Amino acid sequence: MGKDEDIERLFEEAWKEFGSIDVLVNNVGIFKEPGFLKTTRKDFDLVFGINTWSHFKSSQEFARRRI
Image (tube, rainbow, N blue to C red; front, side):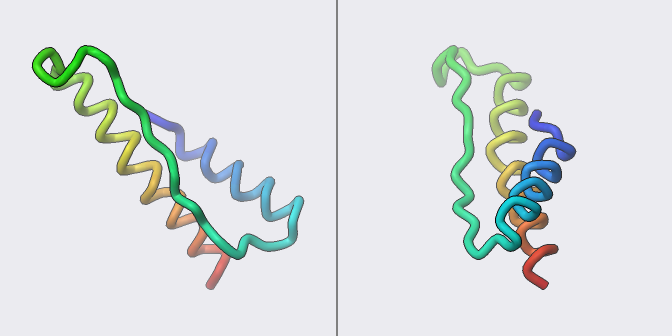
């Protein structure tokens, strides 16, 4: 799964570079290829974790800087 520290660092660097962040386009996701019928629990957990947590964590970091 993506690392929280990487998301935090991304926002910190963007904030330092631009002085503020006005808009968040939460467009991240992965797809692991074995296909629907061959997807394992491990594959599902990886994809679901990245595709949901990354959006949530990015939204948190954005909100922290907007409040």
